[in-house]
Image (cartoon, rainbow over all chains, first blue to last red; front, side, top):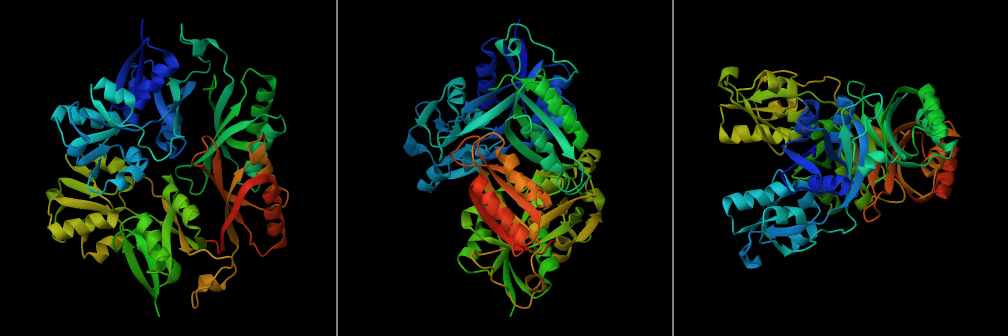
Length: 282
Length: 282
Protein backbone atom coordinates (compact mmCIF):
# COMPACT_ATOMS: atom_id res chain seq x y z
CA UNK A 1 0.00 0.00 0.00
CA UNK A 2 1.28 3.42 -0.89
CA UNK A 3 1.78 6.12 1.74
CA UNK A 4 -0.14 9.32 1.09
CA UNK A 5 2.12 12.38 1.32
CA UNK A 6 0.75 15.94 1.19
CA UNK A 7 2.88 18.86 -0.05
CA UNK A 8 2.38 22.47 -1.12
CA UNK A 9 2.44 23.14 -4.85
CA UNK A 10 1.62 21.44 -8.12
CA UNK A 11 2.78 18.01 -9.24
CA UNK A 12 6.47 18.23 -10.16
CA UNK A 13 7.21 20.74 -7.37
CA UNK A 14 10.49 20.63 -5.47
CA UNK A 15 8.53 19.30 -2.47
CA UNK A 16 7.32 16.29 -4.45
CA UNK A 17 10.90 15.53 -5.46
CA UNK A 18 12.01 15.84 -1.83
CA UNK A 19 9.32 13.30 -0.86
CA UNK A 20 10.58 10.88 -3.52
CA UNK A 21 14.20 11.42 -2.49
CA UNK A 22 13.27 10.57 1.11
CA UNK A 23 10.66 7.84 0.62
CA UNK A 24 11.30 6.34 -2.80
CA UNK A 25 8.56 5.73 -5.33
CA UNK A 26 6.08 3.95 -3.06
CA UNK A 27 4.13 7.09 -2.29
CA UNK A 28 0.90 8.67 -3.42
CA UNK A 29 1.26 12.43 -3.55
CA UNK A 30 -1.44 14.92 -2.55
CA UNK A 31 -0.69 18.41 -3.95
CA UNK A 32 -2.11 21.24 -1.80
CA UNK A 33 -2.67 24.93 -2.52
CA UNK A 34 -1.08 26.38 0.61
CA UNK A 35 1.01 25.32 3.61
CA UNK A 36 -2.10 25.61 5.81
CA UNK A 37 -3.95 23.14 3.58
CA UNK A 38 -0.92 20.83 3.53
CA UNK A 39 -1.00 20.59 7.33
CA UNK A 40 -4.80 20.43 7.21
CA UNK A 41 -4.81 17.36 4.96
CA UNK A 42 -2.81 15.44 7.61
CA UNK A 43 -5.04 16.75 10.41
CA UNK A 44 -8.12 15.52 8.57
CA UNK A 45 -6.52 12.17 7.67
CA UNK A 46 -6.45 12.68 3.90
CA UNK A 47 -2.67 12.20 4.06
CA UNK A 48 -0.56 10.13 6.47
CA UNK A 49 2.37 12.55 6.41
CA UNK A 50 3.31 15.85 4.82
CA UNK A 51 6.61 17.22 3.57
CA UNK A 52 7.39 20.94 3.89
CA UNK A 53 10.42 23.15 3.21
CA UNK A 54 11.89 24.65 6.40
CA UNK A 55 15.10 26.28 5.26
CA UNK A 56 16.76 27.42 2.06
CA UNK A 57 20.51 28.04 2.09
CA UNK A 58 20.08 31.35 0.25
CA UNK A 59 16.70 32.69 1.36
CA UNK A 60 16.75 31.47 4.98
CA UNK A 61 14.03 29.84 7.05
CA UNK A 62 10.48 29.31 5.88
CA UNK A 63 8.98 30.64 9.11
CA UNK A 64 5.39 29.91 8.18
CA UNK A 65 6.14 26.18 8.50
CA UNK A 66 7.86 26.54 11.88
CA UNK A 67 4.78 28.40 13.10
CA UNK A 68 2.38 25.77 11.68
CA UNK A 69 4.44 22.93 13.15
CA UNK A 70 4.20 24.49 16.61
CA UNK A 71 0.47 25.21 16.21
CA UNK A 72 -0.47 21.69 15.05
CA UNK A 73 1.94 19.82 17.38
CA UNK A 74 3.17 17.60 14.54
CA UNK A 75 6.30 15.46 14.95
CA UNK A 76 9.29 15.56 12.60
CA UNK A 77 9.98 12.01 11.39
CA UNK A 78 12.51 12.65 8.64
CA UNK A 79 14.51 15.29 6.78
CA UNK A 80 16.20 15.63 3.42
CA UNK A 81 18.23 18.29 1.60
CA UNK A 82 17.41 18.92 -2.04
CA UNK A 83 19.65 20.78 -4.48
CA UNK A 84 17.57 23.56 -6.04
CA UNK A 85 18.20 24.04 -9.76
CA UNK A 86 16.29 26.69 -11.68
CA UNK A 87 15.72 26.02 -15.37
CA UNK A 88 13.89 28.10 -17.94
CA UNK A 89 10.95 25.94 -18.99
CA UNK A 90 8.64 26.50 -21.98
CA UNK A 91 6.27 24.62 -24.27
CA UNK A 92 8.07 22.17 -26.54
CA UNK A 93 8.76 23.84 -29.87
CA UNK A 94 8.98 27.30 -28.36
CA UNK A 95 12.23 29.04 -29.20
CA UNK A 96 14.16 31.39 -26.94
CA UNK A 97 13.51 34.32 -29.32
CA UNK A 98 9.73 34.05 -28.82
CA UNK A 99 9.93 34.60 -25.04
CA UNK A 100 8.94 38.05 -23.78
CA UNK A 101 7.65 37.06 -20.34
CA UNK A 102 8.98 34.91 -17.47
CA UNK A 103 6.75 33.76 -14.62
CA UNK A 104 7.58 32.01 -11.35
CA UNK A 105 7.36 31.99 -7.57
CA UNK A 106 8.82 35.24 -6.11
CA UNK A 107 11.74 33.41 -4.43
CA UNK A 108 12.73 31.72 -7.72
CA UNK A 109 12.61 35.09 -9.55
CA UNK A 110 14.76 36.60 -6.77
CA UNK A 111 17.30 33.78 -7.13
CA UNK A 112 17.67 34.36 -10.90
CA UNK A 113 18.13 38.16 -10.77
CA UNK A 114 21.39 38.18 -12.74
CA UNK A 115 19.84 36.23 -15.62
CA UNK A 116 16.76 38.48 -15.62
CA UNK A 117 18.89 41.64 -15.62
CA UNK A 118 20.86 40.38 -18.62
CA UNK A 119 17.58 40.21 -20.58
CA UNK A 120 15.79 43.47 -19.77
CA UNK A 121 13.35 43.15 -22.71
CA UNK A 122 11.73 40.15 -20.97
CA UNK A 123 9.28 41.13 -18.27
CA UNK A 124 9.01 38.98 -15.15
CA UNK A 125 5.75 38.26 -13.32
CA UNK A 126 4.98 36.63 -10.01
CA UNK A 127 3.08 33.31 -9.92
CA UNK A 128 1.98 31.23 -6.93
CA UNK A 129 4.37 28.32 -7.49
CA UNK A 130 7.32 27.19 -9.68
CA UNK A 131 5.65 24.00 -10.98
CA UNK A 132 2.33 25.87 -11.02
CA UNK A 133 3.76 28.43 -13.45
CA UNK A 134 4.70 25.60 -15.84
CA UNK A 135 1.14 24.28 -15.53
CA UNK A 136 -0.26 27.74 -16.37
CA UNK A 137 1.85 27.91 -19.54
CA UNK A 138 0.62 24.48 -20.66
CA UNK A 139 -3.03 25.21 -19.85
CA UNK A 140 -3.03 28.52 -21.69
CA UNK A 141 -0.74 27.37 -24.53
CA UNK A 142 1.43 30.47 -24.06
CA UNK A 143 4.25 30.49 -26.61
CA UNK A 144 5.65 33.83 -25.45
CA UNK A 145 6.07 32.78 -21.82
CA UNK A 146 8.65 30.70 -19.95
CA UNK A 147 8.64 29.57 -16.32
CA UNK A 148 11.49 29.30 -13.86
CA UNK A 149 11.11 25.84 -12.36
CA UNK A 150 12.92 22.64 -11.48
CA UNK A 151 13.67 19.75 -13.85
CA UNK A 152 10.77 17.63 -12.53
CA UNK A 153 8.19 20.28 -13.33
CA UNK A 154 9.41 20.34 -16.96
CA UNK A 155 9.21 16.55 -17.11
CA UNK A 156 5.80 16.34 -15.44
CA UNK A 157 4.17 18.79 -17.85
CA UNK A 158 6.11 17.50 -20.92
CA UNK A 159 7.78 20.84 -21.51
CA UNK A 160 11.18 21.74 -22.91
CA UNK A 161 14.10 23.38 -21.13
CA UNK A 162 15.34 26.53 -22.90
CA UNK A 163 18.16 27.39 -20.49
CA UNK A 164 19.64 25.26 -17.70
CA UNK A 165 20.77 26.45 -14.26
CA UNK A 166 19.97 30.12 -14.56
CA UNK A 167 20.21 30.58 -10.76
CA UNK A 168 22.64 33.26 -9.47
CA UNK A 169 24.23 30.89 -6.94
CA UNK A 170 24.58 27.16 -7.58
CA UNK A 171 25.13 26.30 -3.90
CA UNK A 172 21.40 26.35 -3.33
CA UNK A 173 19.77 23.71 -1.14
CA UNK A 174 16.40 23.45 0.55
CA UNK A 175 15.90 21.39 3.67
CA UNK A 176 12.57 19.59 3.98
CA UNK A 177 10.95 18.00 7.00
CA UNK A 178 8.62 15.02 6.85
CA UNK A 179 5.89 15.54 9.44
CA UNK A 180 3.33 13.32 11.08
CA UNK A 181 0.53 13.94 13.55
CA UNK A 182 2.04 14.27 17.01
CA UNK A 183 2.00 11.59 19.70
CA UNK A 184 4.04 11.00 22.83
CA UNK A 185 5.78 8.05 21.15
CA UNK A 186 7.05 8.19 17.60
CA UNK A 187 4.90 5.95 15.43
CA UNK A 188 6.96 4.20 12.78
CA UNK A 189 5.84 3.79 9.21
CA UNK A 190 6.55 0.24 8.09
CA UNK A 191 8.74 -0.51 5.14
CA UNK A 192 10.55 2.80 4.92
CA UNK A 193 14.24 2.81 5.70
CA UNK A 194 14.13 6.20 7.36
CA UNK A 195 11.73 4.92 9.99
CA UNK A 196 13.74 1.77 10.72
CA UNK A 197 16.97 3.56 11.54
CA UNK A 198 17.13 5.24 14.90
CA UNK A 199 17.06 9.02 14.86
CA UNK A 200 20.44 10.73 15.26
CA UNK A 201 19.27 14.32 15.07
CA UNK A 202 16.76 16.10 17.31
CA UNK A 203 14.80 19.33 16.87
CA UNK A 204 13.38 21.26 19.80
CA UNK A 205 11.70 24.60 20.47
CA UNK A 206 11.91 26.58 23.69
CA UNK A 207 11.34 30.03 25.10
CA UNK A 208 13.75 31.48 27.63
CA UNK A 209 12.97 33.08 30.94
CA UNK A 210 13.20 36.85 30.55
CA UNK A 211 16.44 37.30 32.51
CA UNK A 212 19.97 38.35 31.46
CA UNK A 213 22.07 35.51 30.06
CA UNK A 214 19.01 33.28 29.55
CA UNK A 215 19.94 32.06 26.06
CA UNK A 216 23.54 31.48 27.14
CA UNK A 217 22.30 29.23 29.96
CA UNK A 218 20.13 27.32 27.49
CA UNK A 219 23.00 26.71 25.09
CA UNK A 220 25.31 25.73 27.97
CA UNK A 221 23.26 22.56 28.59
CA UNK A 222 24.48 21.33 25.19
CA UNK A 223 28.03 22.72 25.33
CA UNK A 224 28.65 21.12 28.76
CA UNK A 225 27.85 17.73 27.22
CA UNK A 226 29.66 18.25 23.89
CA UNK A 227 26.39 18.10 21.99
CA UNK A 228 26.76 19.79 18.62
CA UNK A 229 24.10 22.33 17.58
CA UNK A 230 23.53 22.50 13.84
CA UNK A 231 21.08 25.40 13.78
CA UNK A 232 19.35 28.03 15.90
CA UNK A 233 16.47 30.18 14.73
CA UNK A 234 14.32 32.68 16.62
CA UNK A 235 10.63 33.46 16.11
CA UNK A 236 8.52 36.02 17.96
CA UNK A 237 6.12 34.86 20.67
CA UNK A 238 2.68 36.17 19.66
CA UNK A 239 1.29 38.56 22.26
CA UNK A 240 4.63 38.93 24.11
CA UNK A 241 6.45 41.66 22.17
CA UNK A 242 10.22 41.19 21.93
CA UNK A 243 10.13 37.69 23.41
CA UNK A 244 11.13 34.74 21.25
CA UNK A 245 10.83 31.03 20.64
CA UNK A 246 14.16 29.43 19.75
CA UNK A 247 14.21 26.52 17.33
CA UNK A 248 17.34 24.42 17.86
CA UNK A 249 18.58 21.32 16.03
CA UNK A 250 21.28 19.17 17.60
CA UNK A 251 23.12 15.98 16.69
CA UNK A 252 22.04 13.24 19.06
CA UNK A 253 19.10 11.01 19.85
CA UNK A 254 16.55 11.41 22.62
CA UNK A 255 17.34 7.78 23.49
CA UNK A 256 20.91 8.76 24.53
CA UNK A 257 21.43 9.51 28.20
CA UNK A 258 23.51 12.67 27.63
CA UNK A 259 20.72 14.10 25.45
CA UNK A 260 18.09 13.21 28.02
CA UNK A 261 20.20 14.93 30.67
CA UNK A 262 20.63 17.97 28.46
CA UNK A 263 16.89 18.24 27.85
CA UNK A 264 16.08 17.84 31.56
CA UNK A 265 18.65 20.53 32.35
CA UNK A 266 17.16 22.74 29.60
CA UNK A 267 13.74 22.31 31.21
CA UNK A 268 15.13 23.96 34.36
CA UNK A 269 16.21 27.12 32.56
CA UNK A 270 13.32 27.59 30.09
CA UNK A 271 9.73 28.77 30.30
CA UNK A 272 8.55 26.36 27.63
CA UNK A 273 10.19 23.37 25.94
CA UNK A 274 8.95 20.89 23.36
CA UNK A 275 10.73 18.14 21.42
CA UNK A 276 9.64 18.49 17.78
CA UNK A 277 11.13 15.20 16.67
CA UNK A 278 14.10 12.85 16.63
CA UNK A 279 14.92 11.57 13.16
CA UNK A 280 17.74 10.38 10.90
CA UNK A 281 19.92 13.26 9.69
CA UNK A 282 19.25 14.18 6.04
CA UNK B 1 17.73 72.90 7.20
CA UNK B 2 15.63 69.79 7.08
CA UNK B 3 17.21 66.33 7.05
CA UNK B 4 16.25 64.18 4.07
CA UNK B 5 15.04 60.74 5.17
CA UNK B 6 14.31 57.95 2.67
CA UNK B 7 11.80 55.17 3.44
CA UNK B 8 9.97 52.42 1.57
CA UNK B 9 6.32 53.08 0.78
CA UNK B 10 3.98 55.95 0.06
CA UNK B 11 3.56 59.11 2.11
CA UNK B 12 1.66 58.20 5.28
CA UNK B 13 3.37 54.80 5.59
CA UNK B 14 4.29 53.36 8.98
CA UNK B 15 7.94 54.06 8.12
CA UNK B 16 7.24 57.79 7.69
CA UNK B 17 5.56 57.83 11.08
CA UNK B 18 8.55 56.02 12.60
CA UNK B 19 10.84 58.71 11.15
CA UNK B 20 8.70 61.46 12.69
CA UNK B 21 8.56 59.64 16.03
CA UNK B 22 12.36 59.43 16.06
CA UNK B 23 13.33 62.75 14.48
CA UNK B 24 10.41 65.09 15.02
CA UNK B 25 8.97 67.26 12.29
CA UNK B 26 12.22 68.76 10.99
CA UNK B 27 12.60 66.20 8.23
CA UNK B 28 11.97 66.04 4.53
CA UNK B 29 10.73 62.59 3.55
CA UNK B 30 11.71 60.74 0.38
CA UNK B 31 9.28 57.87 -0.36
CA UNK B 32 10.87 54.97 -2.28
CA UNK B 33 9.36 52.04 -4.16
CA UNK B 34 11.45 49.25 -2.67
CA UNK B 35 13.93 48.62 0.12
CA UNK B 36 16.73 48.45 -2.50
CA UNK B 37 15.82 51.92 -3.73
CA UNK B 38 15.59 53.20 -0.16
CA UNK B 39 19.20 52.15 0.48
CA UNK B 40 20.13 53.36 -3.00
CA UNK B 41 18.89 56.88 -2.34
CA UNK B 42 21.33 57.17 0.60
CA UNK B 43 24.17 55.64 -1.44
CA UNK B 44 23.60 58.23 -4.18
CA UNK B 45 23.25 61.10 -1.70
CA UNK B 46 19.60 61.92 -2.43
CA UNK B 47 18.89 61.25 1.25
CA UNK B 48 21.12 61.75 4.31
CA UNK B 49 19.64 58.78 6.19
CA UNK B 50 17.00 56.10 5.67
CA UNK B 51 14.62 54.39 8.05
CA UNK B 52 13.69 50.74 7.56
CA UNK B 53 11.67 48.15 9.50
CA UNK B 54 13.82 45.33 10.87
CA UNK B 55 11.47 43.36 13.10
CA UNK B 56 7.76 42.98 13.71
CA UNK B 57 6.65 41.40 16.98
CA UNK B 58 4.16 39.16 15.15
CA UNK B 59 5.72 38.49 11.74
CA UNK B 60 9.38 38.35 12.81
CA UNK B 61 12.46 39.84 11.20
CA UNK B 62 12.47 41.69 7.90
CA UNK B 63 15.49 39.80 6.59
CA UNK B 64 15.78 41.74 3.38
CA UNK B 65 16.88 44.78 5.39
CA UNK B 66 19.45 42.84 7.42
CA UNK B 67 20.90 41.58 4.13
CA UNK B 68 20.92 45.08 2.58
CA UNK B 69 22.51 46.58 5.69
CA UNK B 70 25.35 44.06 5.50
CA UNK B 71 25.78 44.56 1.75
CA UNK B 72 25.91 48.38 1.88
CA UNK B 73 27.92 48.61 5.15
CA UNK B 74 25.56 51.24 6.56
CA UNK B 75 25.70 52.18 10.24
CA UNK B 76 22.70 52.09 12.58
CA UNK B 77 22.37 55.52 14.24
CA UNK B 78 18.97 55.18 15.91
CA UNK B 79 16.00 52.92 16.53
CA UNK B 80 12.36 53.29 17.43
CA UNK B 81 9.42 50.97 18.11
CA UNK B 82 6.09 51.87 16.53
CA UNK B 83 2.74 50.43 17.56
CA UNK B 84 1.09 49.02 14.44
CA UNK B 85 -2.64 49.69 14.22
CA UNK B 86 -4.60 48.47 11.24
CA UNK B 87 -7.70 50.48 10.33
CA UNK B 88 -10.15 49.97 7.50
CA UNK B 89 -9.76 53.07 5.34
CA UNK B 90 -12.08 54.21 2.53
CA UNK B 91 -13.06 57.33 0.60
CA UNK B 92 -14.97 59.82 2.72
CA UNK B 93 -18.70 59.29 2.24
CA UNK B 94 -18.30 55.57 1.51
CA UNK B 95 -20.43 53.42 3.78
CA UNK B 96 -19.44 50.00 5.15
CA UNK B 97 -22.26 48.34 3.17
CA UNK B 98 -20.74 49.44 -0.17
CA UNK B 99 -17.44 47.60 0.46
CA UNK B 100 -16.93 44.32 -1.42
CA UNK B 101 -13.14 44.41 -1.70
CA UNK B 102 -10.26 45.01 0.71
CA UNK B 103 -6.72 45.67 -0.47
CA UNK B 104 -3.45 45.91 1.43
CA UNK B 105 0.12 44.69 1.86
CA UNK B 106 0.23 40.88 2.34
CA UNK B 107 1.48 41.16 5.95
CA UNK B 108 -1.37 43.54 6.88
CA UNK B 109 -3.93 41.16 5.33
CA UNK B 110 -2.34 38.28 7.26
CA UNK B 111 -2.59 40.25 10.52
CA UNK B 112 -6.32 40.91 10.04
CA UNK B 113 -7.36 37.30 9.20
CA UNK B 114 -10.05 37.11 11.89
CA UNK B 115 -11.78 40.24 10.62
CA UNK B 116 -11.57 39.05 7.00
CA UNK B 117 -12.99 35.63 7.90
CA UNK B 118 -15.94 37.25 9.66
CA UNK B 119 -16.83 38.97 6.36
CA UNK B 120 -16.49 36.24 3.72
CA UNK B 121 -18.49 38.19 1.09
CA UNK B 122 -15.64 40.73 0.92
CA UNK B 123 -12.74 39.59 -1.25
CA UNK B 124 -9.21 40.55 -0.26
CA UNK B 125 -6.47 41.45 -2.71
CA UNK B 126 -2.76 42.00 -2.32
CA UNK B 127 -1.29 45.47 -2.93
CA UNK B 128 2.34 46.62 -2.72
CA UNK B 129 1.97 48.78 0.36
CA UNK B 130 -0.51 49.75 3.10
CA UNK B 131 -0.42 53.51 2.44
CA UNK B 132 -0.08 52.75 -1.28
CA UNK B 133 -3.39 50.90 -1.24
CA UNK B 134 -5.10 54.00 0.20
CA UNK B 135 -3.50 56.04 -2.58
CA UNK B 136 -4.85 53.60 -5.21
CA UNK B 137 -8.39 53.96 -3.84
CA UNK B 138 -8.17 57.75 -3.99
CA UNK B 139 -6.64 57.82 -7.48
CA UNK B 140 -9.25 55.45 -8.91
CA UNK B 141 -12.18 56.83 -6.88
CA UNK B 142 -13.15 53.30 -5.83
CA UNK B 143 -16.28 53.38 -3.65
CA UNK B 144 -16.48 49.59 -3.30
CA UNK B 145 -12.93 49.19 -1.96
CA UNK B 146 -11.33 49.73 1.43
CA UNK B 147 -7.66 49.50 2.41
CA UNK B 148 -6.06 48.15 5.55
CA UNK B 149 -3.65 50.86 6.62
CA UNK B 150 -2.45 52.95 9.53
CA UNK B 151 -4.07 56.16 10.82
CA UNK B 152 -1.50 58.39 9.07
CA UNK B 153 -2.28 56.99 5.66
CA UNK B 154 -5.97 57.83 6.17
CA UNK B 155 -5.04 61.34 7.26
CA UNK B 156 -2.52 61.88 4.46
CA UNK B 157 -4.99 60.97 1.71
CA UNK B 158 -7.99 62.65 3.43
CA UNK B 159 -9.90 59.38 3.74
CA UNK B 160 -12.35 58.11 6.33
CA UNK B 161 -11.90 55.25 8.79
CA UNK B 162 -14.72 52.68 8.56
CA UNK B 163 -13.46 50.33 11.28
CA UNK B 164 -10.71 50.89 13.84
CA UNK B 165 -8.13 48.34 15.04
CA UNK B 166 -9.18 45.34 13.00
CA UNK B 167 -5.86 43.57 13.71
CA UNK B 168 -6.04 40.07 15.25
CA UNK B 169 -3.49 40.92 17.95
CA UNK B 170 -3.17 44.38 19.44
CA UNK B 171 0.32 43.76 20.86
CA UNK B 172 1.83 44.53 17.48
CA UNK B 173 5.00 46.61 17.21
CA UNK B 174 7.53 47.18 14.48
CA UNK B 175 11.12 48.10 15.23
CA UNK B 176 12.77 50.52 12.82
CA UNK B 177 16.43 51.36 12.37
CA UNK B 178 17.70 54.72 11.21
CA UNK B 179 20.68 54.12 8.94
CA UNK B 180 23.48 56.24 7.61
CA UNK B 181 26.33 55.60 5.19
CA UNK B 182 29.05 53.71 7.02
CA UNK B 183 32.26 55.23 8.33
CA UNK B 184 34.81 54.19 10.90
CA UNK B 185 33.59 56.94 13.24
CA UNK B 186 29.93 57.65 13.80
CA UNK B 187 29.08 61.00 12.24
CA UNK B 188 26.56 62.94 14.30
CA UNK B 189 23.68 64.83 12.79
CA UNK B 190 23.42 68.22 14.45
CA UNK B 191 20.31 69.29 16.28
CA UNK B 192 18.73 65.89 16.77
CA UNK B 193 18.48 64.64 20.33
CA UNK B 194 19.18 61.03 19.34
CA UNK B 195 22.58 61.96 17.99
CA UNK B 196 23.55 64.00 21.06
CA UNK B 197 22.90 61.23 23.56
CA UNK B 198 25.51 58.50 23.78
CA UNK B 199 24.51 55.11 22.40
CA UNK B 200 23.51 52.51 25.00
CA UNK B 201 22.67 49.67 22.66
CA UNK B 202 24.93 47.99 20.10
CA UNK B 203 24.18 45.77 17.12
CA UNK B 204 26.75 43.42 15.62
CA UNK B 205 26.91 40.63 13.05
CA UNK B 206 29.32 37.70 13.09
CA UNK B 207 29.84 34.26 11.64
CA UNK B 208 31.14 31.45 13.81
CA UNK B 209 33.98 29.09 13.08
CA UNK B 210 32.53 25.77 11.95
CA UNK B 211 33.37 23.83 15.13
CA UNK B 212 31.17 22.28 17.86
CA UNK B 213 30.10 24.74 20.53
CA UNK B 214 31.05 27.75 18.38
CA UNK B 215 27.89 29.78 19.07
CA UNK B 216 28.11 28.96 22.77
CA UNK B 217 31.63 30.38 22.87
CA UNK B 218 30.44 33.52 21.08
CA UNK B 219 27.63 34.11 23.57
CA UNK B 220 29.93 33.39 26.50
CA UNK B 221 31.90 36.60 25.78
CA UNK B 222 28.77 38.52 26.77
CA UNK B 223 27.60 36.27 29.61
CA UNK B 224 31.03 36.36 31.29
CA UNK B 225 30.74 40.16 31.45
CA UNK B 226 27.03 40.33 32.40
CA UNK B 227 26.17 42.00 29.10
CA UNK B 228 22.49 41.52 28.33
CA UNK B 229 21.57 40.31 24.82
CA UNK B 230 18.20 41.58 23.62
CA UNK B 231 18.03 39.64 20.36
CA UNK B 232 19.74 37.04 18.21
CA UNK B 233 18.84 36.28 14.63
CA UNK B 234 20.47 33.96 12.09
CA UNK B 235 20.79 34.42 8.33
CA UNK B 236 22.35 32.06 5.82
CA UNK B 237 25.81 32.84 4.43
CA UNK B 238 25.44 32.93 0.63
CA UNK B 239 27.57 30.26 -1.03
CA UNK B 240 28.31 28.41 2.22
CA UNK B 241 25.29 26.10 2.70
CA UNK B 242 24.19 25.59 6.30
CA UNK B 243 26.52 28.25 7.65
CA UNK B 244 25.05 31.39 9.22
CA UNK B 245 25.58 35.01 10.09
CA UNK B 246 24.31 35.85 13.57
CA UNK B 247 22.84 39.30 14.20
CA UNK B 248 23.05 40.16 17.89
CA UNK B 249 21.86 43.24 19.79
CA UNK B 250 23.17 43.92 23.29
CA UNK B 251 22.70 46.59 25.93
CA UNK B 252 25.90 48.56 26.25
CA UNK B 253 28.04 51.09 24.43
CA UNK B 254 31.16 50.47 22.40
CA UNK B 255 32.73 53.23 24.50
CA UNK B 256 32.49 51.03 27.63
CA UNK B 257 35.56 48.97 28.48
CA UNK B 258 33.62 45.76 29.23
CA UNK B 259 31.94 45.96 25.79
CA UNK B 260 35.27 46.61 24.08
CA UNK B 261 36.71 43.58 25.90
CA UNK B 262 33.72 41.47 24.88
CA UNK B 263 34.08 42.46 21.24
CA UNK B 264 37.83 41.79 21.25
CA UNK B 265 37.16 38.39 22.85
CA UNK B 266 34.43 37.74 20.26
CA UNK B 267 36.93 38.49 17.50
CA UNK B 268 39.05 35.57 18.75
CA UNK B 269 36.24 33.03 18.35
CA UNK B 270 34.60 34.24 15.14
CA UNK B 271 35.41 34.08 11.44
CA UNK B 272 33.89 37.45 10.71
CA UNK B 273 32.72 40.29 12.97
CA UNK B 274 31.30 43.73 12.25
CA UNK B 275 29.79 46.39 14.50
CA UNK B 276 26.60 47.60 12.79
CA UNK B 277 26.08 50.54 15.10
CA UNK B 278 25.88 51.87 18.63
CA UNK B 279 22.80 53.97 19.26
CA UNK B 280 20.28 55.04 21.91
CA UNK B 281 17.79 52.30 22.74
CA UNK B 282 14.36 52.92 21.20
